[in-house]
Amino acid sequence: MRKLFRSTVMKRALCTLFFIFIYVLGANVTLPFVNLQQGLQLGDATNTLQLSSALTGGNLRGMTIFSIGLSPWMSSMLLWRMFSVSKRFSQDRVPTEILERRKMYLTLAIAAVQALAVALYLPYQTSSFSTIFLILLNTVILIAGAFLLVWLADLNSSMGIGSSTVIMLASMVLYMPTDIATALNELNLSINWLWIIAFSSLFFLYIAIIFEKSKYRIPINRLGIHNDFETYSYLDIKLNPAGGMPIMYAMTLVSLPQYVLLLLAWLLPGQAWPTEWATQLRMGSLPWLLLYIFVIFLLGIAFAFINVNGDEISEKMEKSGEYIDKVYPGAPTRRYINRIVSRFALIGSFYLLVFAAGPMIPVLWDMLLLRLAMVPGMFMIFMGMVFTMQDEIKALKVNENYKTLF
Image (cartoon, rainbow, N blue to C red; front, side):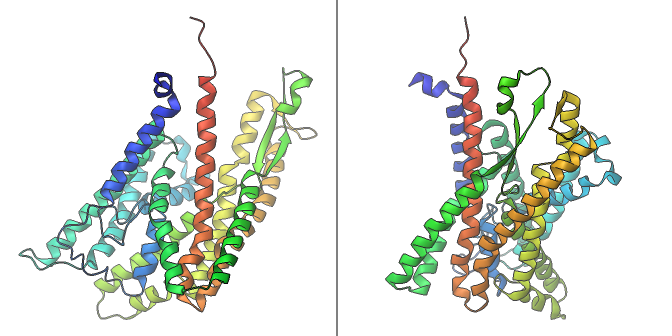
């Protein structure tokens, strides 16, 4: 027992459980002066924003301090990554502290927009305080809650297991079973349909595991290694290099215009177009579905090249004296790796579209199917997180297999 608690994996797991406890505790702390008997007054956008926020650790259903979740931080990280790809901005020459500060400024700006948009439509109780004061108070609390989640995610990255994704994982575990049960209850399906859904889920699970575990191996030659060990040296490229992250980020990015439009609807009370556009972009509508498909496909390509960066890999191989058979080091190696990644990026993007965006098509005719249609995408995210944590635990156990001589 003493040896178990000395394990690095156990120590990190206990830290992660403590961080999850703080998240669950905060997810049940409601905002002040809010009437819990009424729902969030966002009109047709309420249901869709509630579902999308749950993927990023948010809780718009209970109107708590973690209502907007990690959505601002995720959006800022993605936008920052897009800016840093271009050499024009010379991000590699800027000190790390300044870069992190700029990222937090961008996160603060996005969090302010989302928090203000939510605070404007909260059902407030009658009190001696003015409505403007209550809106500003809850806006500040929501921003603080988002940054508290960012802090918890950073702590878990350095002290726990699962990096920053453990917050989203906990959120999905809390809300996904409830969403499935609610959808099945609303649809009132027959036993035959339930069997069809069960077998379809098992088939999807099988396909998801295959795509998650399938890899293309590029043999790598390393100078100084005997030929007998050559088969143990290779570069792995997954069949779906982007994983399930494009779905989560797509939900976040597609919901951002709704927050902006809801904010504009309050600032421009005489204009009807912000409300109309926000309604058109609600989850399950045709404009939303087309935008969702476009963003998933784009992010599937982008994340593939982010996860398997041919420039970085070829540069490291050239410095360490590694090479691929019949491929010259440097630029030829970079082009060779990027060409293979582009092929699998297309395969992975179409796979994401089929299993994440495809089930959304029947929602165009029946909104009651929305919660069930989201399950495959949420399950792909969940599976990716679990396998990532599994690989991290395996890596941590490697160091524990070595014993000191003294």
